[in-house]
Image (cartoon, rainbow, N blue to C red; front, side, top):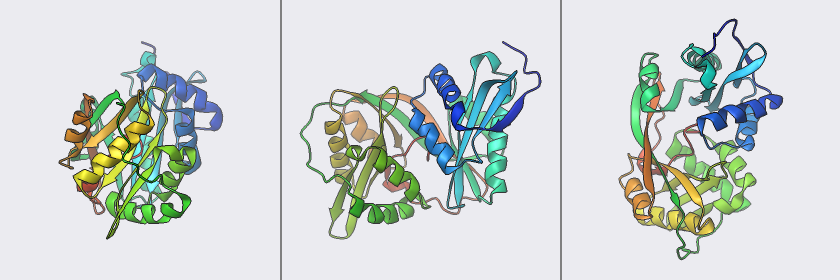
Length: 285
């Protein structure tokens, strides 16, 4: 383990993406260069790197949603520099940025190890999430409609009620990046559910995955799996939704690890997590 010495923290820039990818690989995470670029595009003043002797040894990113709440994520530290407080300083810089920008509530998705650190900084539990992974089975497609440009406005409006804030720029970004992951279901009352996804370095990522009813959730799941049949998929199931875990387990997925969604400050916009089968990602909300 190395000495922390004179640590510097500055804004992350596009040339730092390769360093972020190195730390991501050391941690075994799933993000791509496109994920880093999205953070830099959405929050150019809220992404940070820690440097020791000019070398990037840590990262953190933030993402604000309508100033109602924002995420701190991508807190990565080079294993050679762990247990020196670098991750804590990056976390605190992310919190300072969000709260200084007028964001009412700071949220994050914590591992069991990180939960103690976050509790000490005023975060409280909101609900539990579970990471599941599996090889997408070959299954009959439900024949659901891929989300079109004409569908996006309605999907984003519906999603604001479910998520608790407007994240249309994220949904549009995911859709523009790869629309083939997406699907939408309509019912007599309007939108009954939808799913997005993205590519990863380790696996396809399924989410957000939103449904008004379990049967709709099941159709969306199998539509997504059909499109990536034979390939690895990650999904983070929201346990507030009573169907989410059962559906991914029935599809042959295996449990990997627990997460706890936590928040600091008031939680005035919790949305409707009962309709969330799979989150957009621990780094996205």
